[in-house]
Image (cartoon, rainbow, N blue to C red):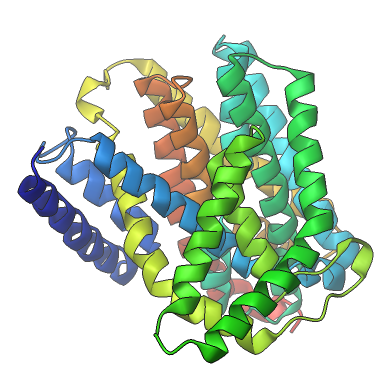
Amino acid sequence: MDTSTFFLYLLIILLTARLFAEIAVRLGAPSVIGELMAGVVLGPSLLGVLEPNEVLKLLAEIGIILLLFEVGLETDARQLMKTGKQSSIVAIAGFFAPFLLGFGMAYYMFHLELLVSLFIGGTLTATSIGITIRVLSDLKRQQNKEGQIVLGAAVLDDVMGVVLLAILYEFSVAGGVSLINASKVLIFVSLFFVLAPMAARFMSMLIRRFDSVSEIPGLIPTSIVSLVLFFAWLAHAVGAPELLGGFAAGLALSRRFFLPFGVALKTDTDFSGRIETQMRPIIQLFTPIFFVMVGLSLNLREIDWTSPFIWLFSLIFLIVAIAGKLLGSLLIRESWPMRTIIGLAMVPRGEVGLIFAELGRVSGIFDNEVYAGMVIVIALTTIMPPLLMKWFYGHWGSKLAA
């Protein structure tokens, strides 16, 4: 592909992603669904205008690393401290229930291989904290009791999900399940949680000092992108996926990060806010490329839609995905409307689920049918909860504690 063709492809991707994202939001769905559909329309499933190539895959990889950086940057670990036991129950049960149910169904019912089954279970554990926060914010329930429980649970779910992703990535590289490799990844993540606050303080001081004397604009985004890329390289060097490095960098620089066991680290919240503000346009430029590439990689024409497999597969795992998250909310002592809305808020998979599914595809673990089934489940669990939550609040909102 020559340079001019690449420019044309990139132009089409960016504009189409934006157009479909706008349409999705106006229809009440998350923007990520619109970007995914843009890839489906442009790719071999429909128009066949574009096809994945190495350059676009590289840009998509940058996009996903920056997306995980944003997830880490927005992670508020103090939410977990505020809601404590209830958030922990919702998160832990809502993490392990879909993972174990998903793995069990894939391995024993569909007789899929062990690694494939583990990846399916892992894909179903995800909760999109971004979509959850967006919906609660739109409904003005973010500061209410259920909002605090959900946000705290989503934070813990997010961290556990990224750790699981790192372990599954190691399994995919090694070609099988290995407790030694899993232990290596866990040690890396544990060391990070100990060292990240100190690294964050040092890096923030260094960047802030240079920013105050620099006479050239743009030092903060240049420094932060370089830092994210370094963390991504470091993560790969120790055997974890590059995107874990992006999450690590975001979490380290978050204004809401705190040391384990509740020991707060004093950070410059104004400077952290400037990082968020100046990095957001860069993240918003690259991340749609990733979601469009997910759609481009999905060839719906190759799927035998007359086969009962794809329908049964999608239906079973859609039920597992919803029931697994609702189970966590049923274990806390609250009124049933409160437990229901908390469970619904934890259902959206969004971009986090797509990250798992895409890693399964590029690793050669998911074939086209399994990948398509997972994307269908992720899409439905992303679209349905915001609509159901709005309806539920309209009918039962008065029964929820303020």
